[in-house]
Length: 133
Image (tube, rainbow, N blue to C red; front, side):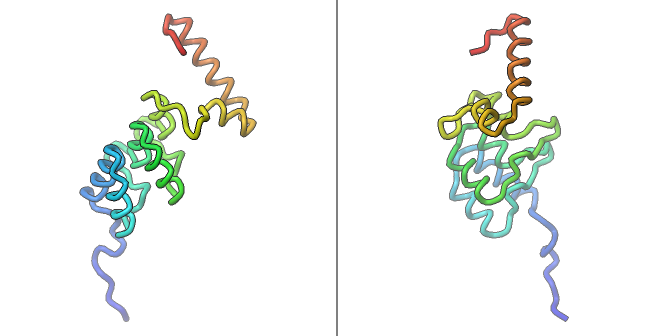
């Protein structure tokens, strides 16, 4: 019988999760690569349900977003408020990815219900006096 270490299946520590999210927030890809290389899952969540992808998307760090996605980060991960990384990107004005907007992606994928939902939200905002560009 082979003895296993106590932390082998324990998952990341809160400090490791915090370090991962902070690295994504502040565009420190080397730190993310290092944490991932020692086994910290890229989808690790903090107490608010935020992931590294939430942080990178919210701050417009496309190189980190690309790295996280290419290495299996869940693009549909939700925080406690049910927001995905794409929500955070859009809420912070980072709507372009590889010269395409979320609407472009929805149209390309034939997701017309998404386009309709975006258009309805824009119409509602304009009715409430919010200028949408």
